[in-house]
View 1 (cartoon, protein in one colour):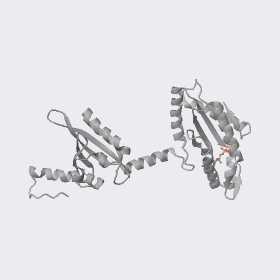
View 2 (view 1 turned 180 degrees about the vertical axis):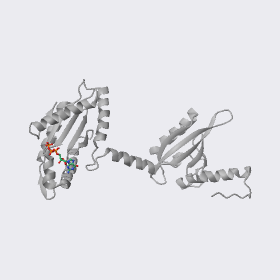
View 3 (view 1 turned 30 degrees about the vertical axis):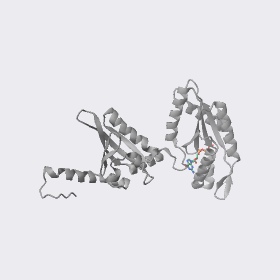
View 4 (view 1 turned 60 degrees about the vertical axis):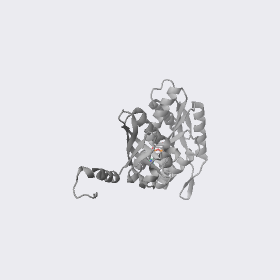
Amino acid sequence: MIQIEDSELTINNVNTIFESVLNHMGAYVYIKDVYGNYLYVNQLICDLFHCTPDDIIGKSDESFFTSSHLQGILDSDRRVIEKKQLVEIEESGYLISQQVLRVFKTVKAPIFGKDKQVIGLYGVSTDITALHKLKLKLENQANTDYLTKLANRRCFFYQADKAFSFSKRHGVPLSLLIADIDHFKKINDTFGHHAGDEVLKALSIFLSNNIRNEDTISRIGGEEFAFLLPGTPLDAAHLLADRLCEAVSKHLFNVGKSHINLTLSIGVTDLSNDDTKFHALFHRADDALYNAKNKGRNQVIAI
Ligand SMILES: Nc1nc2c(ncn2[C@@H]2O[C@H](COP(=O)(O)OP(=O)(O)OP(=O)(O)O)[C@@H](O)[C@H]2O)c(=O)[nH]1
């Protein structure tokens, strides 16, 4: 609602109306000089900074945002002024007063003086923090296996394609392990599906704790796990697979009140010069796994 002093709507009260619109449009609106000092802020900015306009005018973002994210804001201001162009960006910043990360969708544009020099900029920012959080959550859900919280098959192939390109370009080794639990069906049949789920969760933690930080583990099937080992040649990957195989076979996993042993079959391979796609590695490791199963399980085969 906008209320003006006059009884008629004329050109004279347009400024008052604009001011009110700026304060109620649900976006942060500001004008800065070329040094980044605020010349105008609407009410929403005052609410955000917990300050009056007088506290803000003449000051720059250094006074209101912590240094951790300030650079992004300052860089986009500089781009507007130096390139004399409108920019549309996603900005984020920690408010000094609140210590919470805010994410903004921002449009900033230059203000030109009469000799076509940039004399300042204006900006309109919308708070998209909630949307940003939701986006991160959905991205995380799309890439995570619901049961074990490991990376899922989709995420695995995305990471694998990136690791493959990197290794090819820089001539560094890349190894792949595919591990499959032996006779897992028996565990489900004996103890029930829920117990099977608990075993999968416990095994995922166990395997994650037995690899290096730079290695990744994903659940790519029901009882099938893939390990990407960047920078690791085949002999070292084989050693790791042997170590995992042995460690799992010696570990006791809790199923209700019982403790059970598991074994793994593992196929191992590494990047070769002839590989043009990650799928070549994947199929080799899968073939190796198939051989390990055929040869009696609880073992590692490298190709
Ligand atoms: N509890 C549980 N079981 C699963 C899940 N995904 C797949 N499985 C089970 O895993 C079992 C896989 O059986 P198979 O493919 O015959 O393999 P296996 O019994 O492990 O035998 P080998 O792989 O040949 O050693 C099936 O019983 C599936 O139902 C899951 O998310 N939870």
